[in-house]
Length: 127
Image (cartoon, rainbow, N blue to C red):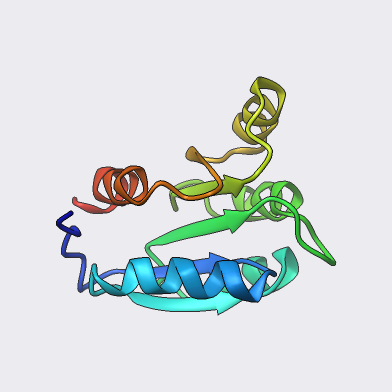
């Protein structure tokens, strides 16, 4: 499977599970993006506020301190444009609706489908 080339982009990965973060980092490495990893929603909000180079956020939903839904709501208060992609093991219709209402751009179920992740990145970062 060919990874999209996104060398000029920076992705913020908000993921509290070390193993999951390492897996997504390995998948993203093939795209050439710069990857910043944070462990909770509060860190994600702060990073988006402080770093104008972030092109997209991959946001886990269940994290300590501040979950992904609250973090995305906070990000949307000051940045309506950055793509924020939900990542969750809970992929029910209710979960998708909550994510959409919170302001997520897209929704990916875990375990991550690499092809779907690449397609989603290409869709939101190829401009």
